Image 1 (tube, rainbow, N blue to C red):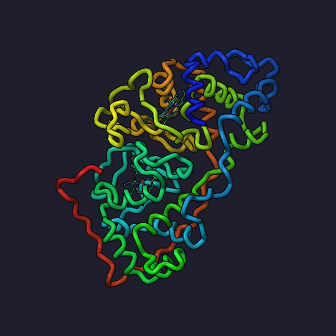
Image 2: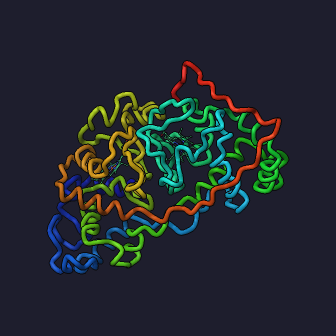
Image 3: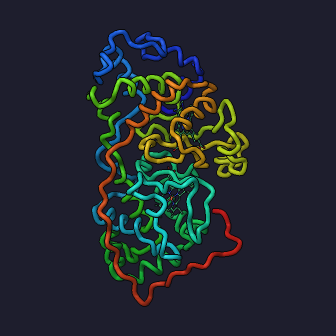
Length: 379
Ligand code: HEC
Ligand code: HEC
């Protein structure tokens, strides 16, 4: 389905700008005839047409966690996964947990250009949010992990992140009797439930609950005209007619495919550093140089800074760069303002997470190790 959508977009190219509606015939940039007075937020006239068009491209975030293949969600598993998500003793320093870089008080990110991990080492990329990550076709900017379970094993071992390893992580968890009980309840019937795989499964189960339903856009799509302002609806129209939705569609407004960052025009070197070839490092295919997963635009208003380099702090600037880099279009200030106003309607209800109390360590728990290897390898 997504490739069809892209093909349709490629076929019309940026001439898509000339056909704003699904058959409504209104030229791009023209105010709808029957627009309500500026004080009113209820849209008449074009409203239903753009809503039908939006309904074909996007989906609302479901209110409950989606089912996972091969990893049924149970209360016990989700609760254990939450503890592990906040568990700093999964890092060798006992300082860093998943929540350090994917802070659930901050939209699931760390507000850093690129993340700071073990021993104050600076990683190579910006941390994407964990919110709604369950809906992405694969994980990481380059898609190198197929799902959240596979992904969760990465940071624990990455020398610039948590700098631990599977043996140490499992020795830590097995040394704490409460964890042995909680793993046994979350993975009933398994001879030795405390394993690295089960750790990752529990974290994945918790992450699946980190969805943000009820965003203004979702309420508007469901028929609540007052949920979006006139400017925001205009922004949606520009977003679709310019072709942004070719790569940012579906439930996550992204996360469905891989695209060159610089389809039409290479972004400045500072924003797309030459050292990061993106998906090329996964596929070794020349065509994949500077190709990245199109990120989700859900909650984008609160997850600055932007791009895999984290070099752009202003959402307006990110939108404008996308126009020139991906579409070869110089967006006007009004268009950028409208699109940005629209993107702000994608901020949903943030997960209400009760901070877990973690069980105490024992004499058998490997003690913290804060030494930093001198040849600090990139991950
Ligand atoms: C030191 C900071 C740091 C820590 C700790 C960390 N992450 Fe990340 N996380 C990142 C960065 C940076 C990326 C992007 C890396 C890349 O794409 O190459 C990332 C990517 C992700 C993604 C992919 C999201 C997407 O849309 O592609 C998920 C999910 C995630 N991390 C979950 C976790 C979990 C679970 C933990 C704990 C086990 C964790 N992270 C620990 C920094 C961190
Ligand atoms: C051809 C596909 C494509 C098109 C068209 C496209 N984007 Fe993107 N978008 C991407 C990719 C790929 C990235 C990730 C770039 C990177 O950092 O490597 C991205 C990143 C972004 C980001 C930053 C997200 C973040 O979390 O850092 C925003 C905002 C964005 N796009 C908005 C838009 C808007 C608005 C439009 C239309 C003007 C648009 N995009 C058009 C593929 C596309």
